[in-house]
Length: 130
Image 1 (cartoon, rainbow, N blue to C red):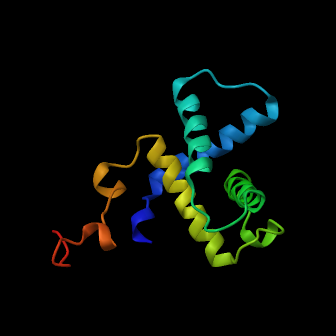
Image 2 (spheres, rainbow, N blue to C red):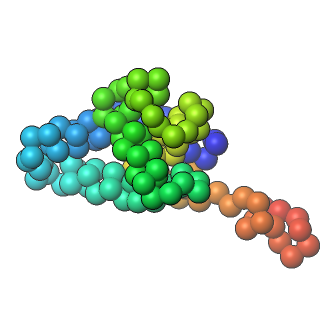
């Protein structure tokens, strides 16, 4: 889980981007500044890329909407209604979702983005590659 960790400033930027995206959706007007466009695109890409396990497409869509709603309206899991996952699982998905948004916006460096683990990092003799 440490792979998806972000510092305070990165979290605040991601939360602000999601809130602005929500406001732009409500008003029906899109910001023309490059930063907000990049933020909206990063959110859409994160919605497509997030892994929520073996959920059906309808359930997956509902979980992703709840993740977005949780960040956009600063609502805790308890107030979101049916999320189709436990509290701990929901918050781990939310952490991954925020990380993906930050990564798609270019805020995450390559060292934090791609840590090789498990079988991918094992060499021919089964020892980890350093």
